[in-house]
Length: 73
Image (cartoon, rainbow, N blue to C red; front, side, top):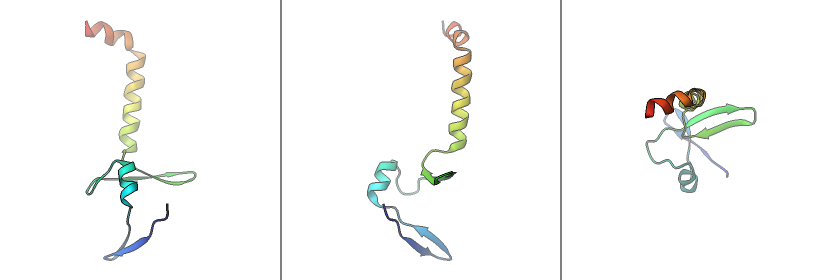
């Protein structure tokens, strides 16, 4: 998809087509994160820090699964 850069005051902005916003599941005033990858930048609505923390939490829960099951009884 081709995007055009536009002047926004003293900065430069990019307009995202409606179809792209729908696929990203974002709307006006939402936050997007630009994550640098070896192939370029990835534009995502998911905070990479939160994703990292969730991954650590999942690993912790998997490691102590039996303890959590016992506590749930």
